[in-house]
Image (cartoon, rainbow, N blue to C red):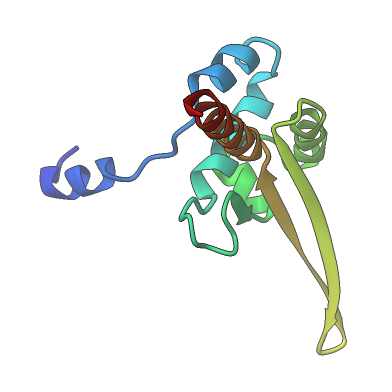
Length: 130
């Protein structure tokens, strides 16, 4: 890094992925799917009060640019991630000014698993405390 103060600012931003996700999926996922998974995590919103918590909107061109994955193969790897239970994705199409437009909507599903585990642990603590 040539501009250290700028780099330090960037170091405060990170995408956190639990070890159990890394341990469980690093070997079975293909490298392109793993790169796409990291890209989606990197661009997802994780502010607790956000309406888009654990979600992002990326175009295939953006995924290609970030991951280096050929554009024609991106759908294949997105399905690999969805089949593994790591993401959900939808393509929304709409008409604007007489033209069809679309956007891709990705949800990080492992965040839901973590949230459910936290809720279950909290309930167990309360039950054990009675």
